[in-house]
Image (cartoon, rainbow, N blue to C red; front, side):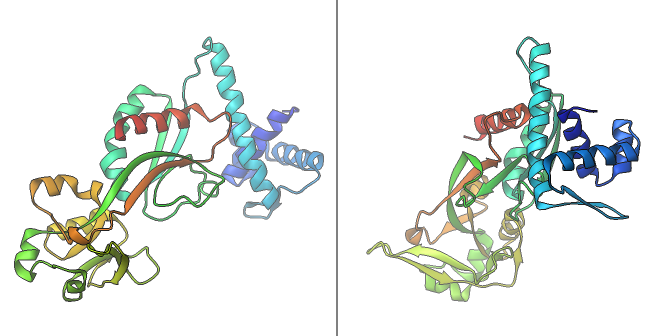
Length: 298
């Protein structure tokens, strides 16, 4: 363990496990040997990478940067060796961490898991479904499926899907409470909304004659943090909801949900991307997963 790659490997294990002892067990080294290698690395770099306490290790900002890049370098070394050993054809392998919204994940990602893992059996896929915004670097996520505008220009993205938003309700709800004919009618309706939006819920509309855009504040007695839950309550006749059409298209086709206020629909498009921390030599497990997903969704 006296070379730079060896020091990187020791540091990555210690940072990941937050323990010299645990890293030592993984690498078959003593805790003191792990500590000495990390100290030697810090001395060579001229900066502190870790803050040691009696209970755990905490990375400094410089340590966070080094960890991200060291992981990338070690992955590239592994893939290069695999490619040479296999005559140029590296096999995707290792843990792949993917996060997606609940709605997109259930509808598109989960049905592909079996086929993807059958195609790439050396990959260990870890899937997290969450409608919150995930810090890709901070939470060590390989691929995040995100909807809406992309704000972090340091990340790479590949478009997977675009879907028009639509307001829907069940026929039973409309029979009981009436069909809203204009956005102002929503004041008399129960509108199901999303809890992850920190401000007042406003739905966008467009005047059919002037084509002017405007917003209408809506409210109701229920909010949820994911699309499938809101959709389920729409199907139960609880109220109206504004969701991406991809969430509800099968129910619109079956007539169990009905689009409303389409005359005022502003045709706003929900873009969905696969987002990742891109670099020149992207890990093959990341590249193959994005390709696999894009081929089956687009």
